[in-house]
Image 1 (cartoon, helix red, strand yellow):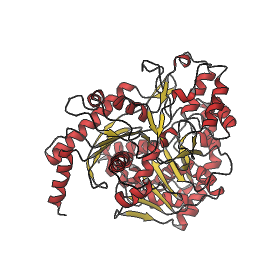
Image 2 (tube, rainbow, N blue to C red):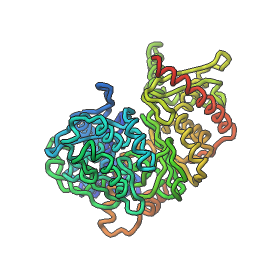
Image 3 (cartoon, one colour):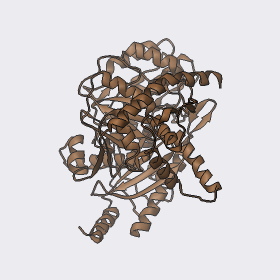
Image 4 (cartoon, rainbow, N blue to C red):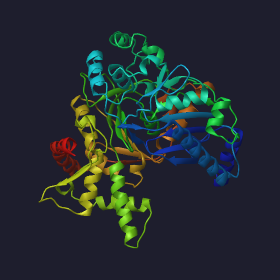
Length: 538
């Protein structure tokens, strides 16, 4: 197909509504991504930057900011379509919504929000998480929705008796667009444990919880307040007129598009990296960083470093989730960018990252004895209830820009690697590890260091920087395909319809990097005592 033919095909797909729109609400950016019948090709994108706020010691986003951000991202997408193709779409074939997993959005019977959104970043649910982990025999992390709910029950918060519905951010947006209180199984698995045999909430654990909460919240029925669970490929409602107006206040967007089950960023990351089959895994790096490994069998014991979630199809996944990812690295890059401007040589943000990342390649394999902690927020895997970003070195360390930047990049993978060590001790094996997120846009740097930290090959696809917005667009397309009679499971659909012929750049671990990172990680683990002291004193 010539470039002109491809252009006309894309234009016709948009005009005829044979497209899929993905919207993902990340921690620092809301992104809209449009794909057509060639599922691997991104036709247009739009985005809007936003940031969480720390209000009354709670990390939160306002719902007003949710909608203004979605509308801005969608408007930017429309502008991109207009600029590229000279047209403005009136509708889409399918739509999908994805967002940060976990957290707590609570509503009463009238649909009014009861308390401010408590995001995944909050670490105030320790008593609830510990009690539930013991009750269920399953690790319940601090960020899970059930931990937030049970902490509210324990604390006798006045909103609990009025509670009618709880959901995640993706579930909330989907509800407002369609009127349906549903959730994809992957996102639901970060609210409450899922029974892999039924791809639904674990019925026995639901009963155990209701028994536990009966004394403090006698009218609370957990199954009644949780969203309904759907697996990938199932239709999850249609865009209503009210939903279309929320997405596009100009009134140009028609209702009627089918929506796929709303998913979390972990699930869309698995889709975006073709890693939904057993013995595959992926790492997603952004404000948080997490690894998802699809299991062949259940783990032998409970580990506080790991939580069990699912793929969008319902298969069991071990998740190593770290609250802190690349934000501290970005702050340092911003400072270096300001230095360049102050010196009379301003450069773009992308150029700053590219120069600093490439400089890191010249550093010592162990980062010269330097240590960087990226903990802006609490980090349960590291035993930290609050964050204190630190840069630490001994007098005999080798302080160079290259070592400093390598230490910062190693620091992004530090806590993640502590959790991955636990998976290795469980005997979990990987055939392929994929990576995605903006951290991997500079080719061959973060990808190489991640391979060294995991001692495993790491692959990055061409669509890696599009991440979850593209992933949820693919899930929306899968729902349309299943409705039209396509008889493929999700893994087969990805391999045969989405990633066929797509290029992956794979980097094998370098033995010098592996040894160097191992040395760094030993110092990193020992140095966590400094982090804990900083939390206690600063």
